[in-house]
Length: 388
Image 1 (cartoon, rainbow, N blue to C red):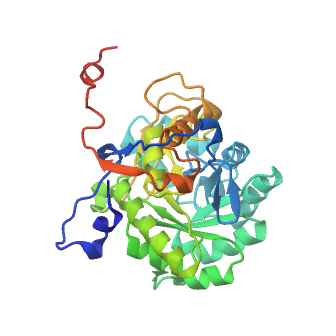
Image 2: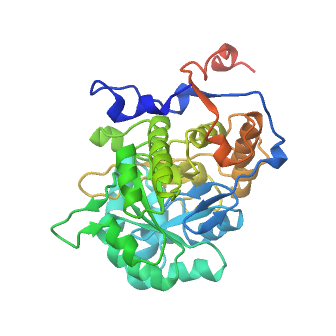
Image 3: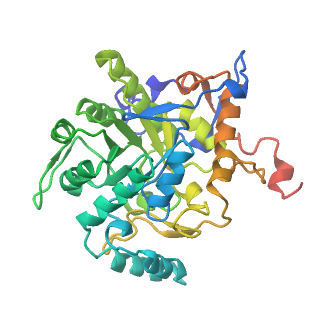
């Protein structure tokens, strides 16, 4: 079993330690199983009780107002990027048409940089939040640290339910000489709105963010299918290790303060098995980008692009083609028409938890995890050779 203590930085004797991703670990059935119908997937993020622990990423190809409403009605939530196309253009459809119609990745990158050069407009932020709220849905929005103060004020006035401050690497204080420095403690203290913070891969950083008032912590630097941060900047930690460390920090913080701060694994998950491993590693919810960009309801029309892709000087994302498109409800709840685990994600998580005897997300945090680098290939020679 993976011992969380052996994975913490202050427990290592050298600067180089082993870290693990989803393909290198497996979940171990115990002596008890449960009825899948009795498995509870509810989780609380901020003040929102979600029936399923699934969040759509704040990516323009994944989440617009309509997708946010749909995700909310299915039991989850979708975060809208307040610095995206929907707050720069009254009608972003022509821009999306040009991006998805680009013949090459460099052409798409140029179009994205050009499109995102338009200014963000407060009235569009206000309007998109009000549109989601008018449908009775969870209004979850995201912005970067540099714009957090201003966007927080607009979002709060519009009635947003969840406010995410997200950057490639988050810290308790963002320092800028060109604008208002962001102290998370000041923001959370002044804003009567749950402030989620991401992203981190460090238990120590996660604990600092919790102490500064974060309502939830997002874990993951560079694992997303449309993200190239790991290639461009060379930073990141595989998601199982990163989630274990953040979850260990959450548990320590809860024991010391009585405050339980949810951990959200963000990115790097494609199948139901990946999601189950994220929850077992300690996540209270998962945030998905490309798997949900495959939904017919997603605004990217079968494509996705990283949030840092529009950067005109150092893009850390790329446009990718998702492939097969299906109704969002089928991706989440099935029925599945394939055997590779990318459909009926909720059903797969429920079945995995039942087989492990976990009837709640908190119980799933206690299941045994083993290091198993051959888990995907052991006994699968016919499958790997293309046999049926």
